[in-house]
Image 1 (cartoon, rainbow, N blue to C red):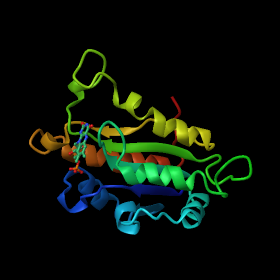
Image 2: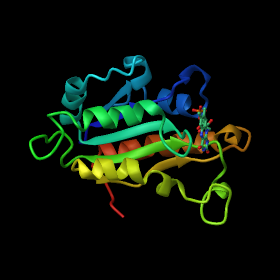
Image 3: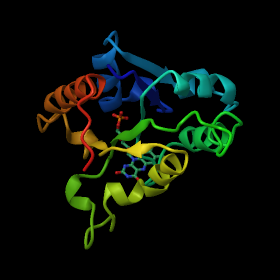
Image 4: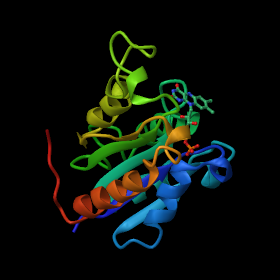
Length: 183
Ligand SMILES: Cc1cc2nc3c(=O)[nH]c(=O)nc-3n(C[C@H](O)[C@H](O)[C@H](O)COP(=O)(O)O)c2cc1C
């Protein structure tokens, strides 16, 4: 069984629809540890030692966040800047992230049709997430396909929220049970 760590960053969790529903759905699930970065570190002073200890203790690491300006919220960037550079994580001595799996679970305001070449946002979500993935690859992780919900604002009215939440729980169960597929 894989141990999964969800590292969540939403600056306004109470006003969230999509991410809040995802968080509620995994509460109490076996084999999943959940941390809320904005709650733990409202002052942005990330405890790298504590975070590396958490990484050592898990097999699959997930960043969950709403997309902010085609990237992550600032605290995820701060997490990468501080934790990956710490003595427990930075190669060659640091080994915290080596051999772990990584993916992002993100929601976007724009619909899927707004992403990709020729569309308003020009690039795909995978392309926007490349700096995040590459940083995790450079620290020794294997990157898995990301889990994306597009057009978050309209997900409920279009009936997409429930299947999305089911898909999220199913994905976590598969990752936890060792069914990891690398494309
Ligand atoms: C500061 C900020 C920047 C945002 N940037 C983007 C963006 O670049 N692309 C996009 O599709 N949505 C963007 N959004 C919309 C959010 O991603 C969207 O509201 C969120 O995913 C909805 O999830 P929630 O219900 O959990 O809050 C942005 C929202 C905020 C507050």
